[in-house]
Length: 87
Image 1 (tube, rainbow, N blue to C red):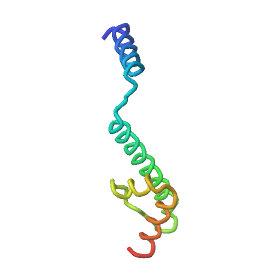
Image 2 (cartoon, rainbow, N blue to C red):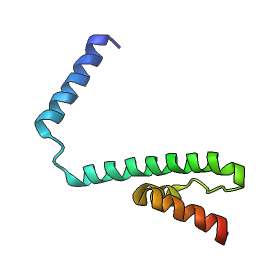
Image 3 (cartoon, helix red, strand yellow):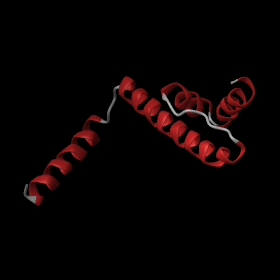
Image 4 (cartoon, rainbow, N blue to C red):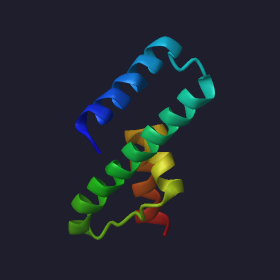
Protein backbone atom coordinates (compact mmCIF):
# COMPACT_ATOMS: atom_id res chain seq x y z
CA UNK A 1 0.00 0.00 0.00
CA UNK A 2 1.09 3.49 -0.70
CA UNK A 3 2.07 5.61 2.30
CA UNK A 4 -0.21 8.44 1.15
CA UNK A 5 -3.22 6.09 1.31
CA UNK A 6 -2.36 4.96 4.83
CA UNK A 7 -1.84 8.52 6.02
CA UNK A 8 -5.11 9.60 4.38
CA UNK A 9 -7.07 6.78 6.05
CA UNK A 10 -5.57 7.53 9.47
CA UNK A 11 -6.25 11.25 9.00
CA UNK A 12 -9.84 10.52 7.96
CA UNK A 13 -10.38 8.34 11.04
CA UNK A 14 -8.98 11.03 13.31
CA UNK A 15 -11.21 13.63 11.68
CA UNK A 16 -14.23 11.32 12.05
CA UNK A 17 -13.49 10.82 15.75
CA UNK A 18 -13.09 14.55 16.28
CA UNK A 19 -16.43 15.24 14.61
CA UNK A 20 -18.37 12.36 16.18
CA UNK A 21 -16.58 12.41 19.52
CA UNK A 22 -17.55 8.80 20.39
CA UNK A 23 -20.76 9.80 22.16
CA UNK A 24 -21.74 6.21 22.83
CA UNK A 25 -21.32 5.47 26.52
CA UNK A 26 -21.41 1.68 26.12
CA UNK A 27 -18.41 1.80 23.81
CA UNK A 28 -16.53 3.92 26.33
CA UNK A 29 -17.55 1.60 29.18
CA UNK A 30 -16.38 -1.51 27.33
CA UNK A 31 -13.08 0.22 26.59
CA UNK A 32 -12.56 1.16 30.23
CA UNK A 33 -13.37 -2.38 31.38
CA UNK A 34 -10.92 -3.80 28.86
CA UNK A 35 -8.18 -1.44 30.09
CA UNK A 36 -8.87 -2.45 33.71
CA UNK A 37 -8.68 -6.11 32.72
CA UNK A 38 -5.27 -5.53 31.13
CA UNK A 39 -4.04 -3.62 34.20
CA UNK A 40 -5.24 -6.45 36.46
CA UNK A 41 -3.35 -9.00 34.37
CA UNK A 42 -0.20 -6.89 34.65
CA UNK A 43 -0.66 -6.66 38.45
CA UNK A 44 -1.02 -10.44 38.62
CA UNK A 45 2.06 -10.93 36.47
CA UNK A 46 4.15 -8.86 38.86
CA UNK A 47 2.63 -10.62 41.87
CA UNK A 48 3.56 -13.99 40.39
CA UNK A 49 7.05 -12.78 39.52
CA UNK A 50 7.69 -11.44 43.01
CA UNK A 51 5.68 -14.07 44.88
CA UNK A 52 7.54 -16.96 43.29
CA UNK A 53 10.22 -16.61 45.95
CA UNK A 54 7.75 -17.49 48.71
CA UNK A 55 5.72 -20.02 46.72
CA UNK A 56 2.80 -17.73 45.90
CA UNK A 57 1.18 -18.17 42.51
CA UNK A 58 -2.19 -16.68 41.54
CA UNK A 59 -3.40 -17.91 38.14
CA UNK A 60 -3.94 -15.23 35.52
CA UNK A 61 -7.40 -15.64 34.02
CA UNK A 62 -10.32 -13.35 33.22
CA UNK A 63 -11.88 -13.54 36.70
CA UNK A 64 -8.72 -12.89 38.71
CA UNK A 65 -7.60 -10.17 36.28
CA UNK A 66 -11.00 -8.49 36.59
CA UNK A 67 -10.86 -8.61 40.40
CA UNK A 68 -7.33 -7.20 40.46
CA UNK A 69 -8.14 -4.58 37.82
CA UNK A 70 -11.41 -3.32 39.27
CA UNK A 71 -10.45 -3.45 42.95
CA UNK A 72 -6.83 -2.44 42.41
CA UNK A 73 -4.14 -3.18 44.99
CA UNK A 74 -6.61 -4.28 47.72
CA UNK A 75 -8.09 -6.80 45.28
CA UNK A 76 -4.62 -8.05 44.47
CA UNK A 77 -3.87 -8.50 48.17
CA UNK A 78 -7.20 -10.29 48.64
CA UNK A 79 -6.40 -12.71 45.81
CA UNK A 80 -2.94 -13.33 47.29
CA UNK A 81 -4.43 -13.95 50.74
CA UNK A 82 -7.02 -16.35 49.34
CA UNK A 83 -4.34 -18.23 47.42
CA UNK A 84 -1.92 -18.32 50.37
CA UNK A 85 -4.30 -19.25 53.20
CA UNK A 86 -7.33 -20.89 51.64
CA UNK A 87 -6.05 -22.81 48.66
